[in-house]
Each structure stands twice: as structure tokens, then as C-alpha cells.
Image (cartoon, rainbow, N blue to C red):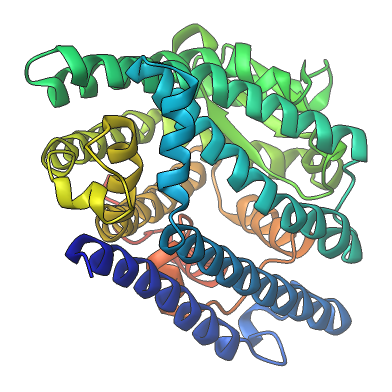
Length: 416
């Protein structure tokens, strides 16, 4: 058997096993009663319900990943990629067009396989626990818009990468530069062009909340170009808030479900946390890490696509560049996981820092503590995640660790 095929199969199975072990450990870490220090977050019946929600989601996620792995291995070993390559060759004599056909068909196949799982997750599991507010129309429109954006933006980036690798010396460097510039442009444009395609953003109306937020921003000399309410309730009753954009597109988005459930003081504390991410430079640091990751990826890609054995492993004759990009993704799995773990570690550190910023700039931790507890309860958050799952997958610290850090007012890793 081809060595590259053995490596790819091993990596895919190993990643699946890692997920299985992680989720089993996480389920075993669940406790029948809430930890004593967090006992005020849930009523006993609500806590038991949150545990059922955790189990249902975990079992469903494991089922989905197992089915997806099985189908992928079957597709690979049955010559599916070779079939896609032949279809692409018949579609056009131009390499870039072939690449768009090859990846487009692969994307459609993946979406068709994922569709039943997405439907069940949205309309069964989320509905069972009272979260789902997505209508069939919204679900279909989201799917269509997502595919169109993927085709427009993703297809354009793919065509550019293929052209660069086919014509330009030191292609991997120039491809990285081009993709980085596009990513930066999208970060700037997303709040005003892409995100409004999926949600309605309304400037926060005049009133006590807006006045309190603007007063906080003035005290901190923090320039807010926009405070918006987002209609998150169109899809879910869960709550959130986020900071996005650069320069003139910089804005704070508060879910309408969040505003409905929290006091003005709690909402100001949440905004202060988001402002902390901006003031402490977390967004540029995250972008820099992403760009560094993609540089590593393109450097390794340049080596991998020159290996004929990689293409032969999937039943292809020759070395079509567009197929090499896909196959490299399988080889990149362990590196991607390690880089993801690093990114999550940095992200958790940033969350502690933003919490501390909010405490310092609002004059206390009570409002933020109350807000975090409410968010966890309303979203049925897991109070006792296993440390290994936190280490591998969590971009935010578990609630218990955040509250301990807030109580001490010296969050882990924070230096003033």
C-alpha cells in the first residue's frame, strides 16, 4: 500500500480516536450535582437538564464524526478522488477551471452528507432544549448564502492560489501574501458587508443602556464607532456578544437575547470585557498568529505538492495541483491540531486579561460575575469540563476558573 495513504489513514483515525477519548473523559467528568461553589447558577432540575444536553450533544457529535470518517475512508479507498479528477478533466482543459470543478463538487458532496446532521442538530436537539428559533426558510437561506459566499470568496482565493503556484517563482510566499491581504480585507469588510447578510444589526436605541455604555467609553477614552443590537433570536435563544472590525468598521454587537436577560450594569461589564480585547491588542495578536500559521502551512504545502506518491495514494495519475491542495489538508491535520491548541491557550489567556480589564475599568467584579453566571445558565454551559478537553478545544476558560480569577482580581497570566 502507498506510504502516503497509510499516513493519511493513520492521521485521520488518530484524530478521530483523540476526539472519542476527549469526549469520553469529558462525560466522565460530569457530576450529578453542581460543584458547591457554582451551586447558585442552576436550580437542581435545570442542572440535570444541562447534563442531558451535554450528553445528547456529545453522543450526536461522536456519531457524526464516526459517520463522516467512515464515509471519507470509503470514498478514498473506492477511488472517489480519482473519479472527481476525471470529471474535472472532462469539464475543461484549463487547470484553474478543473480545480474549481474538483473542489466545488467535493464541497457539495460534503454539504449533502452534513445536511441531515445539521437538520437534526438544529430542529431536534436544539429544539428539544428550547434553544432553536430557526425556521425552515432561515435554515435554507443560510445554507444558500453560505454556499454562494464560499463559491465567490473561496473560489476566487482558490483560483488565485492555483494561478500563483502555476506561474510565479517562490509561489508559496506570494500565495501567502495574497491570501493574507484578502483575509485582512475581509476582517475589515465583514462587519458591514458579510455579517449583515445573515443578521440584522440595529444601532442601539437611545436609553439608559446606551447612555451607560457611552459614559463608560468616554471614561476609558475608548472610541466606539458603533454599538449594535443583533437579532440573534432569529436562530437561537442563546446569548452572546462580540467585538469585530477595524478602524471605521469597528463595532460592538450585543445579541438581542443578551439585552433582554441582563441588567444595565451587567451589559456594561460585558462590553468592558469586549473593549478589553481591543485595548489590550488581542485582535492584532490573534490576526498575527493566524497569518503565521498560514505561512507555515504554505511552506509545507510547497513541499507536499511536489510528491508524486501523494497523488498516487488517492488513485490519481499525474500531479494536478488542485488535488494536491486537498490532499495536503489531510497531512496537515496533526500540525493544525497543535496550532489550534496553541491558539486556544493564547485565547484563554486573553480572556483572563479582558476579564481583569473589565474589573479595573468598571470598579468591581460583581456585575461581570453575575453576567458570566447568567450566560452559562441560559446557554446550558458545562460547569465541569475535563481538563484535557479544555486544553485541546476551549477558547475560553471554564467558568469556575474565570470566577476564581475574578475573585482574586489577578487573572492568570495577567500583568499590568
